[in-house]
Image (cartoon, rainbow, N blue to C red; front, side):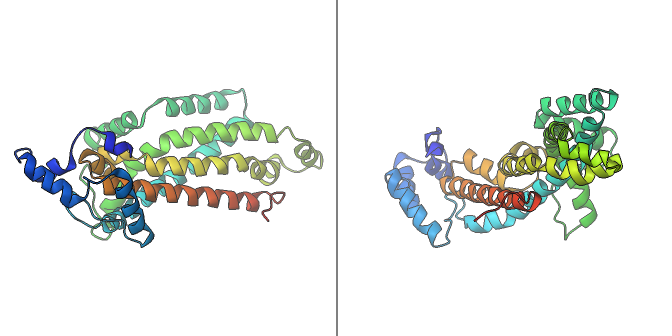
Length: 290
């Protein structure tokens, strides 16, 4: 509904700026956007329930096919970004907690603050400028499918993945540090140390596993944010994912495309949250679902 409040007429975008009002009216009738909003909505929902996401009103392409072509790119970007953030954020968060109020803690906390403070478009632009233009370590070409050129595809992935992982890893560092500090003060951790277990075993076997519950919750939230928030990164690096399709739909007032992409992102967000809830039960035996 909100997209319809944006100024601009998709019918005029289709027929061109020089078209007469009569031609625009005919196109509006042909596209079905001259009907009341609730009629358009129920017609669209009926198609969705039948598995039909409709066609673009700009180029008449099936929206389901466009989403199918791009959703894999978005998954690739968000999953690799999340894994990178996990590999960076959790170990550094553990180090900061173990070395609390000492030099490593201050360094990690400063990095986390920098990662949180830098907007994605700044991180992406700086990375592209340094590693793409100045050092020329990575290519600056547009998207290349994996099957066409696997090596170049992987090289093109590095900068957008690092850009998305910057803020996510900073959040995970802080959450892991806070959670670990809380857990290492518990009685069962003191008991494990009093039994003579090595500090590394106590941290990995007793503390880290229990400290991961809030981090898992955070992973679900960050994945959901990344799924719908990769617009800037996809635009900077020319990555054809769902967000760039959504942005193109908003620019051209392509209502069915916007509705379909938002619906897909919403469903994926629900599924991610469901998966996170199920992982809780695996990590913490005290949590069971009936």
